[in-house]
Length: 147
Image (tube, rainbow, N blue to C red; front, side, top):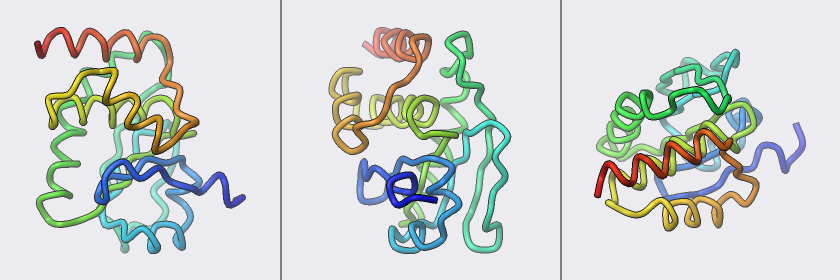
């Protein structure tokens, strides 16, 4: 894979966002000290089962997919990695929609932050993010539910 494709966005020192290319690039994973991988891609195998702790949840990148229903188990896995002083990579197929929505939701939840600030934080770390319209809408709803 090209260098660009396997780049990851560093959201927090222990929270990374990337594509399936990043998840399949051992050098990138080692360099970033990844210990846990949350795979929300559709139809993507986990490449290094003996090296990392994986959780796979296939999330279809469609506006009608209920992304909020996946939040609890995703957040639990991310929190677990953090508790163990690990580094977690959240990845989807391209790392721009489903994985980005999970990370944005996680920040909103763990930092009690607004959708706007969580979105811009993630966008700064990984400029290519572009959650689909349905995910964007649901993240806004999620914020209203938290207020």
